[in-house]
Image (tube, rainbow, N blue to C red; front, side, top):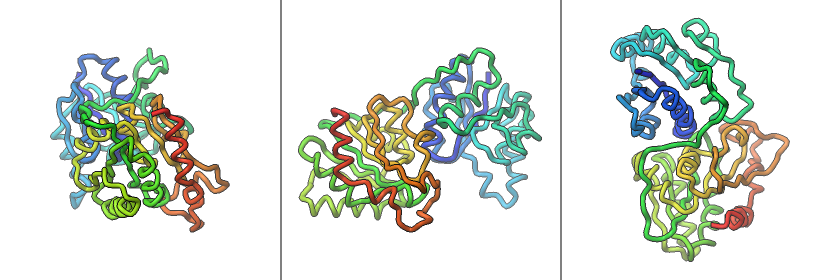
Length: 324
């Protein structure tokens, strides 16, 4: 059975879609999966053992995305089933243009016009649950049980217990705690743990700030990997960590996939919908604010108190409570 899956664009969302993918494979054991998505999501998910093909969607770069989507669909061909985890018109068009009979995406004006199965999914629940319910809409034996996150990239092995620090968050500055406070927390555990600073290509400067603060605090046992890893290397390295301290971000969900003990710092986002899924050693540090969750990329009130009021000592105590 050939199943086309359009992945979410963001790394974290793609990882949160992995339980839905596992449910599909459990329901269709002979499934051959054809993944389509952004470069980031494809690099993380393409290692699934049922993958027949994994293709980066380049249609956005075309002068006519509609025409490019049509041509791409014809290149892909027809499937036994096609599902989109992206709620976007070109994703619906891609599914329709493949001439696949069973096509699935969440309810929207375009999906209702173009696709066969368009369930209304309750958005006031964890995103993992939303994706799982979407994937199982064409089955009649889904009991609601959802597995953990799953990545098939082997975790790296470290000689010494290692702390991962992730101060970035691609969505925007409002989701980011502060480099000096990450450094203060990391410095507290320098005797027990080596330290790795993570960050994407656009977060190199932020990672350098953490490095500068660590050096001022006399910490030497750190490695700065910001902007230096592929997606596969990022996942493997996070997977090998003994502890992860992070903002609400894609790497946070990668850590959950490897069951890495994690302290996640949340500010303006809906923690009940995007917190780590089924990680037994996971703690959220957040402060309830009248203005949160605002879901803005930058603080609209210019005070950022959902983050400024979170202290390094709070995060240190959260780490200790994990018993790592």
